[in-house]
Length: 332
Image (tube, rainbow, N blue to C red):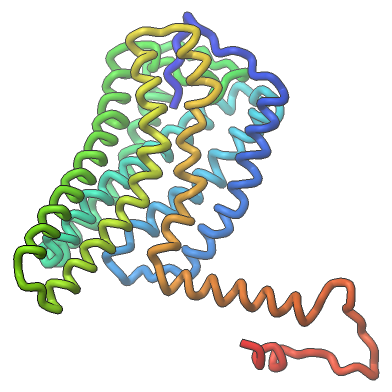
């Protein structure tokens, strides 16, 4: 999202800086997308406790495939090719990024229920698991379509700014504050609050275990709590790192717009949310042992294949015995 005011135009980004950001985002997001597809291909959708991570990865893939090309083209050229693409870029950017942080917030709430009220959420999975995801997935595109496309104000897009300097409703205090206050500040606040509550409850539970006799059941429950908590913290931390600095600077600019804040926002902090899209698949794969095992097997097969068939030694001769798939299977 972009909260720059008309009174302070963003500076023209130097070519070297644009190219650095371009290649940085491009090179690092390619393996991220590959890992995302690999995880989704091997994802176990029947496991209720991890389904929300699959939804997050789908949104992450959509961000890389649908939104990132606009950003890369802008960074490479220094401008968007057509001003008529501005509302499309803005709508995709706002809808998917906000959907991702809302889903992470709901992941925090859902993870709390799985840790401390597992039977309750399993018995009410439609109400507390499937329905919220559907509603959130419909909410963000509907909300931003109304503001970006149909809000009665005069658009002033500029192709020389990131997401074309944003839609016109950002320059009006009421819709801007409602959007920013609810969809960003409140959502991030809930994420931080739920994570803090889980940390505090884990500390209390650990202290109680020290003062009581530890049974095998208690130990297993404690290990499960730690595992689910770590899964949540690894995902939530990406959202917090990517959005809290950007949110603080943007909030400061809403109430006191200065050239310095505009420069910091348009040059650095506006790209911080890509940290989430870049690192999310790596965070997910670490707490999915079955997928991590398959990835290790694939990498081992690739290594052995290259060892058996080095590129500079491949020969095809009638008198030589060629390797077959059955021969390769002998090595695995």
